[in-house]
Amino acid sequence: MSRLFLAPFVLVFVLALACDSSQPPPPSIRFANLVPDSQAVDVCLKPGDVAAFGTPFVGGAGLSYPALSSRATVDAGTYSVRIVAGGATNCSTSLNGLGDISGVQLGEGAIQTLAVLGRLTGAGSPSIALGKYDDHIAPTPSGGVSMRAVNAAPGSNPEDVGVVSGSFLSPSATAVSYGNVSQYQTLPFTPG
Image 1 (spheres, rainbow, N blue to C red):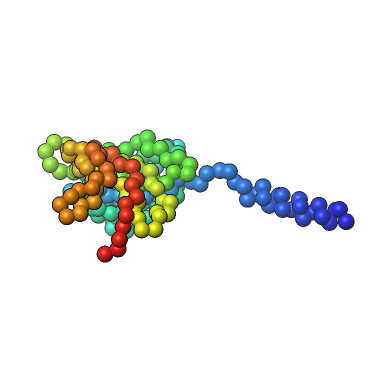
Image 2 (cartoon, one colour):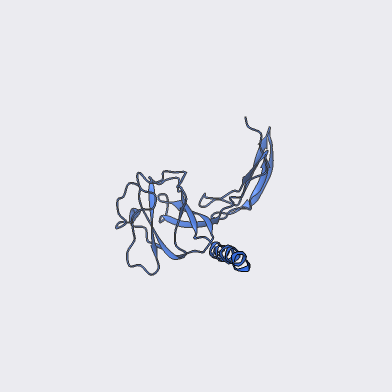
């Protein structure tokens, strides 16, 4: 009788061990085009231990300004990023001869937005950068919306962002400088 009791216990214990994968999930990323004077763009990723870039990340027509891609999971590691024209079918030619952005770390369990920032035209040389922002995807309490501010305006002063009611600004983020992001704030939200 004790053997019959022991077999189900051992089976439950083995199944519990098999289900406990204490390994964090792979990084989940999405891209944003925050370059106001750009055409549609796409991005290519190359892991540090791979010789060539793969296919464009977004595909199709790419991302116009301002747009976000869907999320996708990738392997954790260090990447190089190449910006290509939207609609490109391969990663051989970078957009406007821009150089690759190397040393982009994507860690296990990270949930991030990688934003293409800067400008392509204007006085001086084009200046494109990649901002990496941790995303908050936990549910927001009912009656509220979780927001943050990213300053994607090159050459701008630090900016305040908030909610306007009449002629009064109630700031939710203050002094956000170019390329930086504020902390998440939960703001009350009434539809309509």
